[in-house]
Length: 198
Image (cartoon, rainbow, N blue to C red; front, side, top):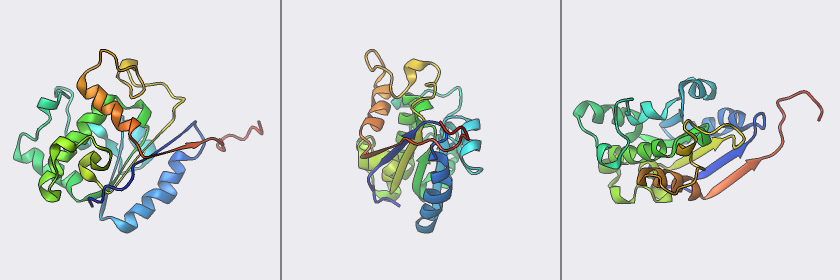
């Protein structure tokens, strides 16, 4: 569960087959190799459209609306939170995050750091290296993000992974760097959902 394999991103417009490939090929393949996989999205609606088992990044990371996403606030504070994180992430071997480009950079950072805290003892992790590509999300074996680069960014737009970094928080910069350090980016070009021949 901690191989730290190359990270991947799949991008493309609506109807090009990103979700279908995830649902019909990648998720079943990962289920053949790993006891647990984590499926997330930035919102409830996106999670439901991705997979019935998917959850929001907030939920998986144990972040509530009143919680800060500052690095200093992300340590695991209670036994109840530790148990929840263990149930969600410790034994996971793969993580797929859908609608990645609608995810706020500080949220991606918070999810990665909190997952590293949850997995650090089981996999002997150095938490200071949590943002390195092979160490993302607690050095989970397989990590992939997919999303539509043509969709609207998160609200506010300035929190997005592709927003300018000048004047942003350290957490935002680290979250955005996680996208820029992905090993492989696949862009899907042909849209097949629509019946119009053009």
